[in-house]
Amino acid sequence: MRITRPFAALAAMATAGAVLAGCSSDAGNQAEDAADDGAAAVATDASFEAGTTMADLNEAGAITIGTKYDQPGFGLLNPTTKAPEGFDVEMGKLIAGKLGIPEDKITWTETVSANRESFIQNGQVDLVIATYTINDKRKEVVDFAGPYYEAGQDIMVAKGNPLGIEGPDDLAGKNVCSVEGSTPAENIRTNYPEATLTLFDVYSKCADALTNGQVDAVTTDNVILTGLVAGNKEGFELVGNPFTEEPYGIGLAKGDQPFRDFVNDTLEESFDDGSWADAWDATAGAISGQEAPEPPTIDRY
Ligand code: GLU
Image 1 (cartoon, rainbow, N blue to C red):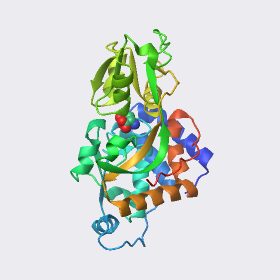
Image 2: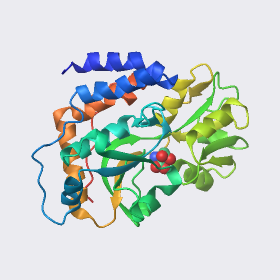
Image 3: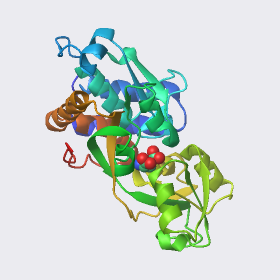
Image 4: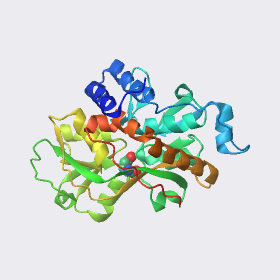
């Protein structure tokens, strides 16, 4: 059933709290809302030039996609269905659909920040869609379609901001948590060396460290922190002062130009036909309460 976007957002918002609280049946509904909204249409007539990655995937009728499993709104594992849910996941379903691959033939694999490049390089995944910033260092070993979203590094602190942290300069002499292999961790290490950096493999461990007072702040992309704050509004708050640009790309094997073109075309179509905005409303937008922004401009570098 096609429902209007404002209603879709409200319906998904009603389930978002339950998703964060770990209520699995409602979490399942969140994904269904997005699917009902046309976000995961499967092309029955897709055909591709022989020898391309698209033709291989279409013929196999299956795809493997790496995403995050602990980031509400972008990639969060539903413990009952064992499938992740979120905006990144919906992007994956859109791309699979264009390849003629239904959702139930997507194999999801958890990729953490530090292993995204190696998973692509080793062929363990066909795509990585995982709050993955496009940058020159990563482009040396993988290629990126996109961007499909523009985030920015921000800071999360304990509710009430007891230490008065308003931006990265205030992290001097403080203990700040981030994730190994991420651009925010690299930024703190390089540009704010007076901060003490605690690193984990995933952001949920940073949130736990903030809860138990082991660290003073958590830093990563604003949209990831927004998801963590939504899960513990009594415990956390977002400083709300983004200080970098983090354009999210879809990682794929370096040099596979036809596949990159195909993913870029698919993203542009989703920007134009409203399925990108529908996916936002049903996932990250439902959690943050924010309308879908204007889609970014694809960078066909
Ligand atoms: N977007 C940043 C990155 O790609 C931070 C988020 C993350 O670690 O996934 O490193």
